[in-house]
Image 1 (cartoon, rainbow, N blue to C red):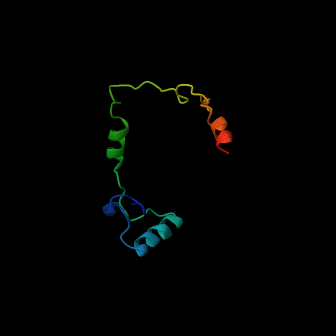
Image 2 (image 1 turned 180 degrees about the vertical axis):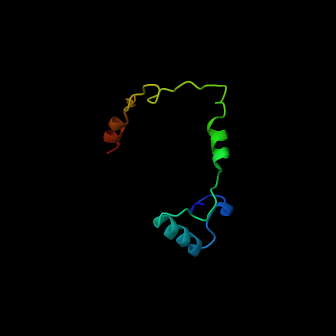
Image 3 (image 1 turned 135 degrees about the horizontal axis):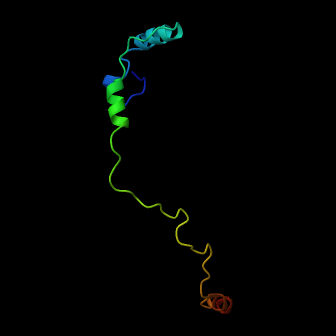
Amino acid sequence: LKALAKNPDNRYQTAAEMRTDLVKVHGGETPDAPKVFTDAERTSMLSAAPASHRTEPIDPAGPHQPRYVERERSGSLGRWLIAV
């Protein structure tokens, strides 16, 4: 069992159950809690065939884009000075 498993059935139901298993493991004994997966289930999952399709890696940088894009000036400064 795990303390933070997503499925509530795979978690310790009380802190006392978890403490009991921790004390046993600290003493060299095996815990009472069952494993989430049995060895056979774990082996079958690991030996399963990989997916048939493969993906191609992407370029992490992506297309090059300049950081500063220079804008065309419209002459608003001149209009501002004339208005003042």
